[in-house]
Image (tube, rainbow, N blue to C red):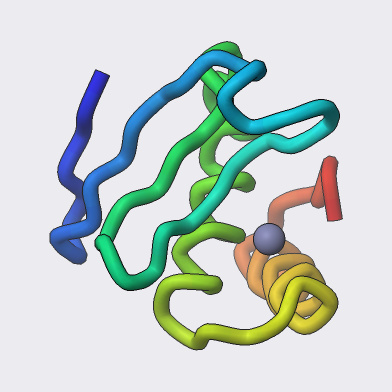
Length: 83
Ligand SMILES: [Zn+2]
């Protein structure tokens, strides 16, 4: 399934074997493509999408991306599940 979001980034839901053990998503920053594990729904999907969009927009390392995702979730009144 392919979804184009508001930033022109394509979002694909992919099986877990494509991402690897314990990986929920991946951003291909030079291709404008985000892959998210197929079984994530609702708030879990949104949380991973936010993380990958932060990778795409700010190109920070994993540690800083995780910290910024957590801050962004808390600022929106969301309880982080993976961060
Ligand atoms: Zn990441």
